[in-house]
Length: 262
Figure (cartoon, rainbow, N blue to C red):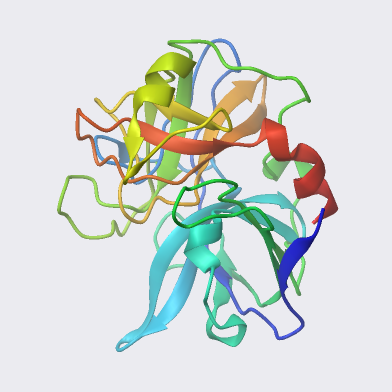
């Protein structure tokens, strides 16, 4: 499979890995994305969460989220980094507050899935390769699910991010998280994402009481396996708790090999 690479120009992506809570793959769930309907994330619960920043008229601003897979790999949504100039991005991590970051790295490479389509939302995934590795123990990174993993209807999951905590609000200063529930494939398939239907490579969550909003794009949909955080989806829609629009995520299972090779 061919890969779209944004390449040796350093994509200086600022990834803020802020710390939040944990849950369980078939049971307990952790809090979620700065999320509409969520609450401030507890310290130490989501060390793998990141914020990707781009330049603006006042300096740099948050554009989307992501999750740290390994010392030099970050998983995010393709639409959050597609078309961005690599040298304009920067990466930071290590705090719940966007103003108090303790780590920083530039990005060596951005790989966007070759089948990504902005018009249909298909394959909305990207992998960033960091120049300066994150100096953490492996237990602080997020994990991909096992091949063949499938979710269950009403299964609880967590979203985490710095998006608005209410529809129409501003990007949150503090990391937020919350618990949502996954819905059936039939409900997901019937949902309209922008002007197109969802596909089998997507997973949906209930719109209330917690859902991703603008700024949460690219962040992980998380379930727990003991103490291991598992990313089963990447946020690609902005429900903002609109009851007519469930949260929509790109499933990671169909893309495990691609993610590992990117």
